[in-house]
Length: 332
Image (tube, rainbow, N blue to C red; front, side):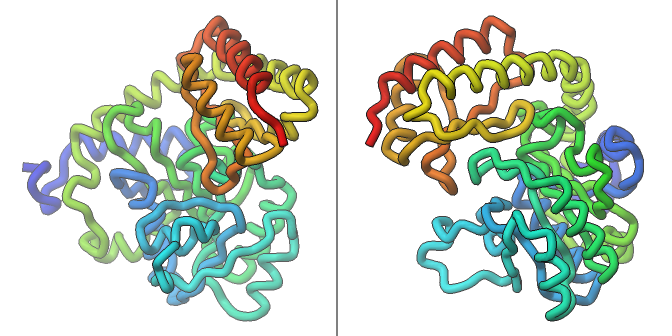
C-alpha cells in the first residue's frame, strides 16, 4: 500500500531519511525525497518562498539546476530556454566572483533564497571560491534569506566530501542530493534541510508530493549506496590525487590545446582552445573506448567523471587515451 498512497508511511523510507540526515552530520534533520535533481530544486524553492513569504530567488551565473520550468529559471544558460518567453520564478543571477553580490542584491529588496552549486558541473567543473560563498551565506543569513547548496552533481564524495558546503562550514539551510544517491541504478534525489525550510511541508504534508517520491524500492537502495560510497572514500581520494597529477601532465604536454584543467576531486574539466576542438576530442575518445560528458553550458570543456569503483589501472588507461585524443584533435 505505501507504493499506492502517501496517506500511509512506510519504514523503508523513514529509515532512508534518518540514514541520510545522519550521513550529513545531523545538523539538517528534515528530508524530502524526489526522483531526480530538478524535483528537489523545485520543492526547495517552493518551500523557501512559502517559509519566508518572499518571491525573489538569487542564483549564480554559470549555474545549472535542471530543465523543468521552475528549476530552469535558476539555470543560467539561455541555451535551455530557447522558445520560452519567461519562467515562473523571479530570479536574479549574480557574478560568481563578487563577494558583495548578495549584499548588493538584498539592499534592493528581500529574497526568499540563495541557491548555488559549490562546484558548477555543467559550467565546466568550476569550483566557486569558498571565501565568496562564506560571505554570501553570512549576508543572506543577516537578511533572513534561506541558503540552499545544490550538490546534485558534486555531493556524495564526488568532490571529496559527503557535502562540500557542510565540509567548508557554510551555514546552509538545505543541501540537494541526487545521481549516486540511489546507487546510480534507481531514481532518487533528496532535499536535506533545516526545520525552518521544511516548516510549510510539516504544516501540510500534501503541500508538495509526487506519485513515486520516496518510493520504498528507491529508498531501500539508499543505505547500501551510502555505505558503499563511504567504503570507497579513501580510494576516491587516491584516484583524485592520481587524476590531479595526470591532468597536470596532460596540460604541460599539450599547452597549445589544453587551456585549463579545473575542478575538484573526481569532478574535473578539460578546457580546450575551441568548441570544435572539444567536440573532436569527445568523438575521438569514444572511438578509442572512453566515454565522457560534454558541457553544454561551456562548449570548450570536456567533463571528466571517473567513478569511485575505477581502479588505478582504469585511470591510467583513461589518461593515456585522453593524451592520444588531445594529440589527434585539430586546433584553430
